[in-house]
Length: 155
Image: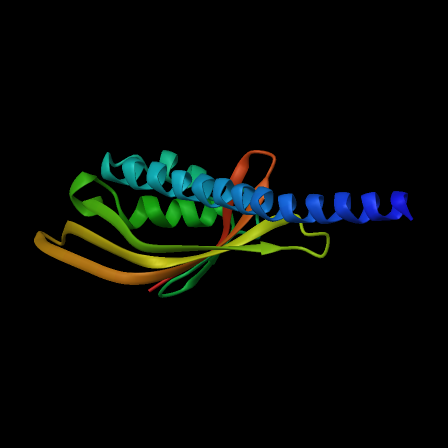
């Protein structure tokens, strides 16, 4: 009887301790995604498309949905290069209202995350000052290289 009471007490103690540990791990994962987004924003604002694209998974099934659907890392990169050919066209990007939702798998391991938010872009388009505002939803995958966007829907 004494052994089972100790075992139950130990089990309860471990269960109570696991909750905060999971919460701390989740906060770290969300912070890692936010860090990638901050790096993307900084890269965009210095007109470095290649560095901006490091936030995307370099894979043929990575998808961008905007006015059209672009599939594949290379196609997305080339589209960015074509539509944002210089500093004036790229302008200044800011992300706001970022909401990171981690998506645990069957074993509780987090391999995916959904991120929603707003973007604002001040730039010169076709010789005129323009402001673009919109929303985005991103599906992220945790890879050996860190968190990467595998699906971007921006409008």
